[in-house]
Amino acid sequence: MKVGVFDSGIGGLTVVKSLLEHHLFEEIVYFGDTARVPYGVKDKNTIIRYSLEAIEFFKNFDIDLLITACNTVSAYALTEMREHAPFDIIGVVEPGILAAENALADKDANVLVLGTKATVASRAYDTLLSRHGYNNVTTKATGLFVPIVEEGLFEGEILKSTLHHYFGELTTPDAIILGCTHFPLIANAIDDYFDKKSLLIHSGEAIVEYLERHYDFRDRFDHTKLRLFASENPDALKAVAKKWLYDQH
Image (tube, rainbow, N blue to C red; front, side, top):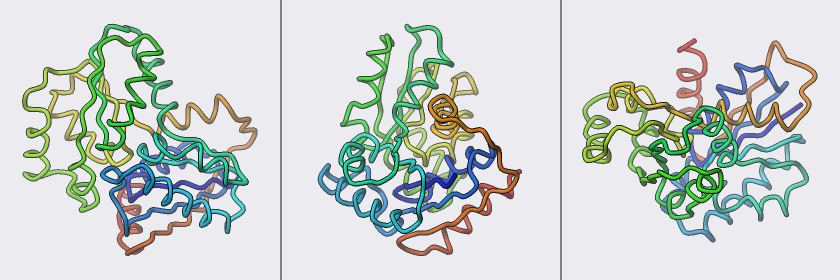
């Protein structure tokens, strides 16, 4: 099977990492729209337009399935994308909710959802969490994390100051949903900020769990071919991929 992974930038590599670790696909085609990142500050119509352009890109690769690793796209553009695509498309919001439900039995737990401005404004996460019975949900737009990750600042004073800016007045949550695929790249810093007392839930493992529940993976592939594309500076994307996907193993 061949899968496409679409993200506004480099954040979707966190999903790719989980796919590689579980050997689900023979080939992964990744496209990051790095020339126009971040999507999270853009209006709905622009997000949909960019997403439909990505569909045209992936039509060149005969993929079986497309994963929209961008939470903002998943919140706003899935319906339109599915109308124009000749392949199945799944987003990351629903799998994230599934992962939260499997990991967090206490429906009164304090759940913090982090996302871009657009994702938070869509109310995609808090609406679905409410439907699943979670009564104590806080959403917080933390869009500055996206350019910080794009710059490769996974630690250091800039990141620490930004963490304090967003979290300084918060009590420690029971669980944190990383509602942007960029955020797992700074998960260790977020975890440390809350003294490792919060359960962190991110899209990569949630996607794998969702895929294995809804698709029949009869084969596992010892070697997965990975093809990386970016709308701007593909060498930078490949450098981050090398560090994140391989050097940490």
